[in-house]
Image 1 (tube, helix red, strand yellow):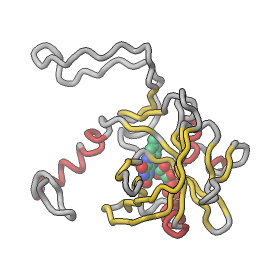
Image 2 (cartoon, protein in one colour):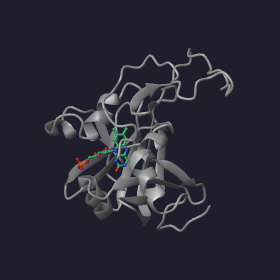
Image 3 (cartoon, protein in one colour):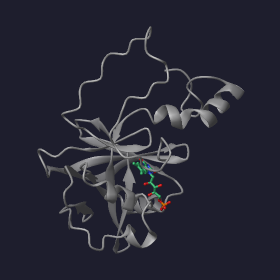
Image 4 (cartoon, protein in one colour):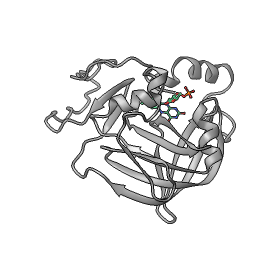
Length: 212
Ligand SMILES: Cc1cc2nc3c(=O)[nH]c(=O)nc-3n(C[C@H](O)[C@H](O)[C@H](O)COP(=O)(O)O)c2cc1C
């Protein structure tokens, strides 16, 4: 790894700035992720935010992290609460992702009409139909540019749907892992055009390649 925690890892000066502006979202959007809803109880109410930045960090102690944009309304709630839960969405739950990403109408960002339970340790909402859930207490936070990196100590973990398939996000669209999809053929740099997109049957979903 080159570069400091505060500066760009590659490139210097004007070139690095142009890279960030023009290409960063497009490049990072090519990294496929799962989609989760992070929830917290704050000031007597439930708050939630869709996130794709969940990462497993450590086994001993068990730690996970996600990144939250500093200007998101969820930011101060989750940092203030100090405890939170993660619901890993299944491929049928893209409407929940939209709902808690603020893509649905404002009035539908709450939990009204949404089947959920409450974590026994954190009290945070756990979405019914999620593949798996974890409950966490904030273990550390780190500055991450316009985001805050929130590391959580996992206090409880549970698989809700052992055979469910995940909602995935790649290049600005929701995708599903379809077991009947043929394995992609190996890339042949001599014959394949450099910008060819793999075929997909998924309907397009509005949004940038990188959601945040
Ligand atoms: C698939 C997907 C993944 C997202 N991942 C993150 C994330 O990891 N961190 C984040 O801060 N925002 C993420 N967002 C955006 C937030 O969900 C959204 O900006 C936020 O809910 C808006 O909150 P606000 O209206 O309170 O500002 C994601 C959105 C989508 C659709």
